[in-house]
Image 1: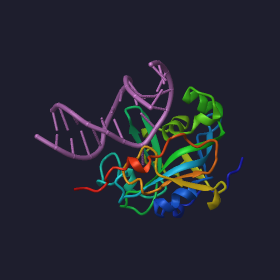
Image 2: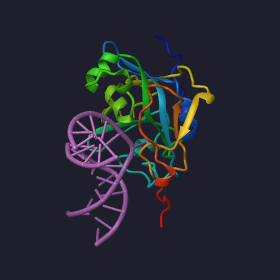
Image 3: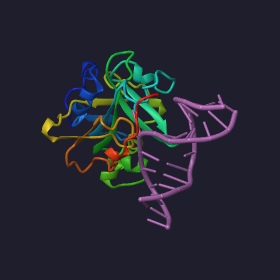
Image 4: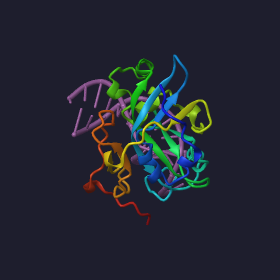
Length: 209
DNA sequence: CGTTGGATTGGCT
DNA sequence: GCCAATCCAACGC
């Protein structure tokens, strides 16, 4: 199957809030047959540097270093003692911003994904940031991988989702800065995650001192 | 140094 | 709906 050209570096060298909705409908691919797995992006979240919810908010650390590097690379982090999550680095060098990949529609390699996930329902293979990372075999090793020129993991143009079909909500599991509705998903798509965005009454003050 | 809680998930009440 | 699993970054002392 063809998914168009690979997305160029310039695609990622924009603010995360612009790259995020533009990533919907794009196609992520990893490995070669028979290990090849492919999915269409249906849900993402933007994380900016001046954003209390972002790993980069308090500056550079060994963990978030990739976020501050060149755009178009993969930022992988480990959380809750057991899960990996993956992001696409955006913006310019020295700026810590990225887009979290939250859900994919599985297109190829569903059997391989099911094997890694220990579950077969197509709607649960890649619905959630840690689930899609597991289905794609994304771990620490892939932190910093180049999506534009590398051969470990690739991102194709696919078919961008029209604005009218993009839905915006507060981010999932984020109580800080919920006034920033930076979760973008394909409206009504059966492959989005079930994560519930925080409600306004759960707002916690995000400012320091 | 010790404590706390997280960009999550799956299993159980 | 609730909670454990299980690591580690951030922060307070």
